[in-house]
Amino acid sequence: MTSSVLERFLRYVQYDTRSDDGSTTVPSTPGQLVFQRDLAAELRAIGLSDADVDANGYVMATIPATTRKAVPAIGFIAHVDTSPEMPGAGVKPIVHQQYDGRDLVLPDDPTVVLRLADFPALADQFGRDLVTASGTTLLGADDKAGVAEIVTAAEYLIAHPEIPHGVVRLAFTPDEEIGRGANHFDVARFGCRCAYTLDGGSRGELESESFSADLMTIAFHGFNTHPGYAKGTMINAIKVAAHFIHHLPSDRLSPETTDGHDGFVHPYVQQSGVDRTIVKLILRDFETAGLAEKASFVAALAREAVAAFPGSRADITVDEQYRNMRVVLDRHPEVVAHARDAIRRAGLQVVTRSIRGGTDGSRLSFMGLPTPNLFAGEHNFHSRLEWVSRQDMEQAVEVIVALCRVWEERATL
Ligand SMILES: [Zn+2]
Image 1: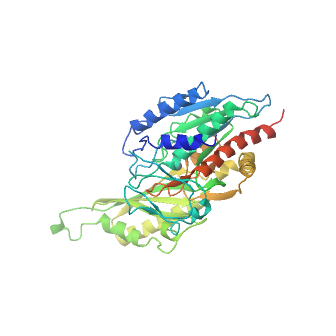
Image 2 (image 1 turned 90 degrees about the vertical axis):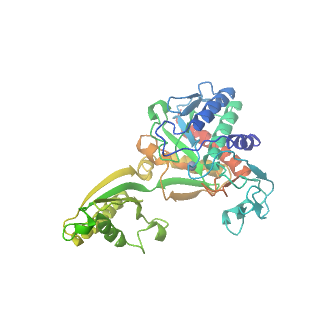
Image 3 (image 1 turned 30 degrees about the vertical axis):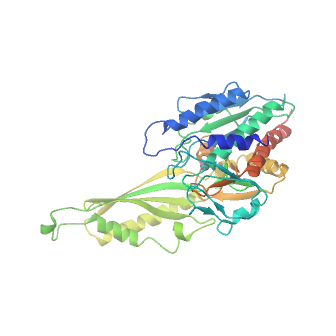
C-alpha cells in the first residue's frame, strides 16, 4: 500500500477538476465528471463492484463486511474538485525526495519558492518526500490526497479480507470548493451511521468542530432624483451604507483581528446605487447562540445609520448557511472517540482543531450523517505553494484501515 498512494496521487492531480461558482450545472464543470468516471472504473477494477457515478456526479462504492458482528456501516468521503481561485489545468507534480530543509524552487516560475522559514510546518517533514506543483498552478492535494488515501485504503482492505471490519462505504463528491458538495449528497443511499472526510492538514489532526454560519443581507433604501435638482429630496443609499460600514468594529469582531475561538462579522460584498445599496455580511461564531447576538448587534448599527439619514430605511434578512458540527457529534461521542483511537494506533499524536470555516462535514452532520474531518496531509491550500508529503499520505491510509478495525472491535456480537 505504501507505494500506491503516491502513484495514485500523482495521477489524479493531472486531471483538471476545477469547480466553477458561476456555473449552474451539476457538477459545475465537465472535468469533474471525466475524473469521476475514471475513478469509478478504477474502484471496480480493484474489486468494489458496485462503484458508480450518479446523475449528479457523485461516486459511491462499497467494501463488503468481513465480519459477522453487527458493525454499523461507516463512510469515508473526499472531494474531487479543486479551488476555482487558482489555475488547476496542466498540473505537473514534482516529487522532492528526502526533504532536508532546502529551498524548493518551482521550475516553471522560479520566483515561487517553498522556504522552511516561511512555513514552519515543513520542520516536521525532514527525511520525507514532498510533492509540489511546478510553480504556475495549484497542486490539488486539497483534496486529491484524500481521494488517493481512501482508494488506497480500500484496495488494501479488499486485498486483506482477514482484517475484520463492517460495511465500509466510500463517497467522492464534486463542488466542495464552491460550497455545493453536500447539496446532492444522498445520505439515505449512502446508508452509514457516520462518515469521515479526509480533507485536513498535518498528520494526526482531527477536526470535530466548525463555525456556525449565517449570511446577513442589508438593503439600504434611499431616494434618487436628478442631482442638479435634488436639494431636500435625494437620500443617497450609498452614504447610508457607508455610515453603517464605518461604524462596524475594526479592532474586534473582524476576520483581520480575530483567531482561535472568536467569531466575527464580515462585510464582503456591496452593490451600490443611490436608490438602493445592498451590503452582504457573513456572521461566524462557534456558538450558534453567538450568531443571534452578532445579528442583533449588526442590525442595531444598520438602524443607527438609517436614523442618521431621515427618510431612508433598511431591509434586513438573515439566512442560515451551516452549523457547528460539534452539536451533532456530541450526541454521537463514539464517532470522534474511535477516530482518536485509530490515529493513535497509527503511531500518531491526536491534534484536535477547530475549523474556522465550514466543511461538507458540517452540513452532512446536520443532514443525519455525523462527519468529522481527518488529516490528509494537505498544506498551503489554494496556493501555488501547496504541498503534501508521501509519508503523511501513507499514514492517513493507515488511519483509515485502523478506524475500520476499531469500529469492528467496539461492536457487540
Ligand atoms: Zn478541501
